[in-house]
Structures are given as structure tokens and as C-alpha cells.
Length: 420
Image (cartoon, one colour):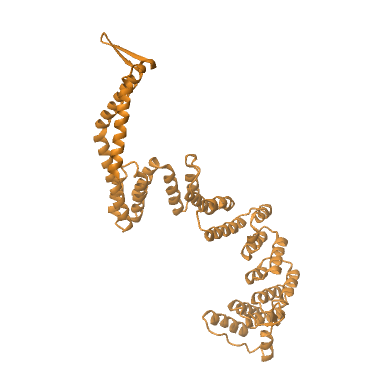
């Protein structure tokens, strides 16, 4: 098929040549114009088509001569590129197999070629870092600055982050000549902003990270949560805290983790009423053990109102060890040790663990009962070691039954449901 195609092309070219020569030999061609060239006292006369054809042939001959003259240089450049690619491939294979010195040598040699220079220098820097040769890695990175400024900025930022200097990483990525940043640059800048205590700016880059698909959706969601919590922790005043809270998506604002951070920061800024209200609203809509435990640990007054809310929750969450511990702390804060002791025994019966035993022991010690306090602290140690606690002689069988008794739980159809 190829031979037939070639024969057809040759026949067409020959036909066109014959037709063109016949056409150029006719007298009617002179009506298109004539070209007169005077040189050396002679006049050379040709029709315009003949002159154009002669000029085209002359240009083709010049191009052919130039191609022949440059052929050795092109062959040599092609050979060097081929050798450079071969050294680059060998160097990358050596790097992957852990032959650091051989890889670095091959990659340094491959870096002499313009096309392979950026990736070769990056790989050579990796090989030097693997050998723990910071000086050589720094030299490769410096050479990369003139070859590829964007890669130089990315790897410089990465090294600054490894050294724990986020501000230097941000400065390396904010160079005007490399904007806009590639996806990896956005991720590095986000990490640097977070480490530098500028979570609000880092949070603002999440949209670009999603658009560039730098990370998979679960990783983006985890990063959003981390930055949001850090952003709340970094709020300098109540106005900034409220503004940052409103920026968060609704799904995050109802999460117990975010509510806890918001409440803790609000208490730190003496915004106690808002801290208590946000926890109460969240617990009314969705129950969370860690959040109710925080409700009892917040260093806020208003013990009466807090205890009233906790007592109201107890009607529907009687088996919650965290709620019973919270009630015990609030009652103890009000100076009502007897009620606090009852709540602690109920919490222990519901699985509160060593913390409840320790609090009970501290209470007994404060009441001047060192033997009971010692027994409670011993039970805390036993539970931490995985051993069952020893019963306290102070509690009779009737009281122990009361400690384990909780209100019956029923589902939406009214059928009894087992606890837990």
C-alpha cells in the first residue's frame, strides 16, 4: 500500500512538473509581467512566473546547504539529549533503589541538559537529603533557583517547614514571579499559615484547595475541621470569635468538638454566658458525653443555673456517667458533699472509671475520713490496671442497688430498650 501511494505521489509530481513547464513555455505567460535583472553588463529577462520559480529554487538550495552545514551540530545535540535522558532515568532508578551516591552523581550529570535540569536537580537534592548531606542538598536547591523558580520556591518552603520556620516558608511562596501558585504550593502555604498561627488566612485557602483537588475529600474535611478549631483558639476578642464562628459551615457549628472549642475560648475571653448557652443548646439537640463533662469543668460561676440544667438532662440521660460526674462537681462546688457523694456512687455504678474514684477519695479526705479516701484512691489505681474495684463498706446492698438503678429507656414505638 505504501509503495502504491508513493508511486501515485511521484506520478502526480511529474504531471504537475510537465504541466508547469509547458505552461511556462507559452507566450501568454509574458502577459503576467517580466523581470529584468542587470548584472555584469548583461540583462537577464524572464517572465514573472519563471522568476518566482527561480527564486524558490534558490531559497530551497540555500535551505538545503544550511541544513547540511548544521547537521553535525544537530546530531551532537541530539546525542547529548539522549545521553542526558539516559542518565536521568538511571539516576531516578538508582534513587528509587536507595543508591544515594550513584543517583546523585548521575543526576548531577543529567542536570547539564536544559530540559532535564529541573527534575534532575530536584532528584539530586532528594538523594543528598537521604545521605543527610544538608550542604549538598542546599547547593542543588540553589542551582534550582535559576533553572525553575517555582520548583525552587516549593522545595525551599518544604525545607523551611521541616526546620520549623513557617514564616520563611510563606515568604518563599509569596514571591510575585511564581504566582499563581500550583496546587502543591497552595497546600504548603496553607500548612505554613497554620503553623505560623494564622489559621484564619489558611482557612480562606480551602476553597482553592478544593477547586484544585489537592487532597481527597476526607483529607480536605479533616483539614477544614483542624483549621476551624485553631481559628477559634486564635480569636483575640469576642468580636473576632463571633465572626469566625459565623463563618464556619453549619455542619461544623453543630459538632461537639467545635462547640467545645468555642465555649472554652469564650470562657477564656470572659464571655461566660455565651459559652454556657452554646453548650446547653447543643446538648438539648444532641447528646455528647465529652460536652457534658466540659459543662461541669468550665471555670464559670452560676452553679445554681448549671445544676438546674444538669438535673433537667438527668431525666432523659440517667445512665450518663459524664452527667453524673458533672452533677457531683456542681454539688461539691455548692458545698453539698452528701449529694455530691451520691452522684459519684451512681457515676461509678454506670462506669465513670478512675476519675470518679479519685474525686470520691478527695471528698472523703476533705471530710476527714482518710480510711475511705485511701480505699477510693486504691480503687482508682486498680481500675487503671484493669482490676475490678473493691466495694466500700459504707454502702449497703440497698444503696448499691439504687446506684445501678436508672430510668427505663423506650424507643419511639414505646418498647423498652436495653441501656446502651
